[in-house]
Image (cartoon, rainbow, N blue to C red):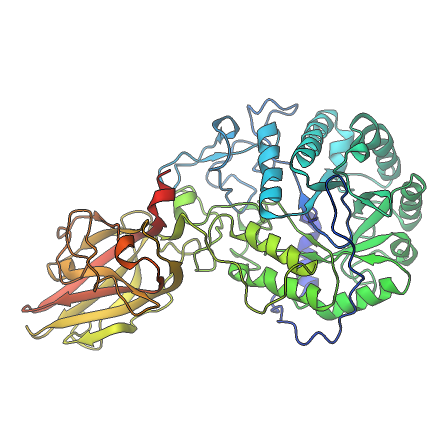
Length: 618
């Protein structure tokens, strides 16, 4: 089962500095440090636990005006209707799976695809159900339901949170995934933190909501699990004496208590003094590592050993990446996801140390780009008038559900159900879209190569000024079909003999079926540019240009067959799948090929798409 927590908003800036953000997480070495905990039996329906599982933190905190909730106003996307420059979240959610009733209009222009820019609220039952349905579908063990300080003391917010928690409980039962409650003491005070937690647990959690009676509620050693985030943090309420009383009180109620504590709990780094005995009183510790981009394997090993010496369990936190440029400014893609490699290295580190459980931060934290829930993959899925981070932000196309698939696989590696491999065994996309890019900076897949001849080579061509070789670059400006960028091939032919140039653009791995098709927007700037076309190289040596594939108008896909109209954008489409099915596309080329002419060739390509048409059209 997966578990996480709300990103440490006001304290994260301190953690980023203290942790040394720039260091890369290294691949683990031999398994010399592993001392695996004895593997617990797999849970059956109605029996959910924490050890030997991986949970994801579930915020459930998004709200929108008109959602019918007790607060009935925008929250967490922004305090008012989100619009350009007026947002507090970083990643745009993939809205395609939500019913129309869960789409709430924003102030942004439409998405790159032309669809309206809408966002969900966590309040509608169909939204909560969709989230837990994803957990079950992809193999996520469960969710840690976040419960924040202000949600317990402000009446309308409590009503909102109680309703979402009840719907999460029902959805967990419906889809047979686990859940437990995690209190985040943010927003409480030294004076009210103790009583607020006690009252909420007795009157609401185990009272009106009867959470611990649910067959999906996680238990450990027969005790209901509850987590508390915040004790010991420099910017959270509660002294050591208060924290100690709270932990012991929950244990006296029969609960199994997890402490989500500062990452430096053991070394007294970035933690309040005097909390050592508090940390030792929890049943399980979960140091908060979000914001730390360094290799933490040595720290995790020492944490594991220290806890094991006292019979405490260890719940390491792993996360996909982090950024908050839209909210707090700063650089975009601050802790890059590296197209999944960042999360995968953390996964391998946990597995190497033989720790059979982990907490993934987070399931739905779009605010600071730590979400694993489906998100916009590229410029076609975000508003045209506002930057948002996408799953392809690292320059390689990854589908909207890539991180959900990766996290589920990571959980199985950590729990020992699947082997740990240095390379991620998770495809970047399962379709229907296998590649889509408008070549927009920071959000779209980018060329792997520039000005580099590929299979087919070059002959009788020069650069656009008559020197060097032809150029393949991302061009920016008003020539793009949409957005600000397009891919541009330029060169010249000095002699009327056969001239050609096949330049590498992207390295990919895309299986071809009978339903696979290619499309792109095309603008030839001169007559030579009409002899430019996208070409594909497959793992069996075949090429698109060498096949019998044609455009939608019956024109051969070979660059030698002129296409388009000089000065006008047109869309080239080819249902080439039947010609090349059974193989895998390895390289995308942009080619020029012409005979019997001299002069320049200049063409732009935008909105490149490779998809399985049968499923895309359903």
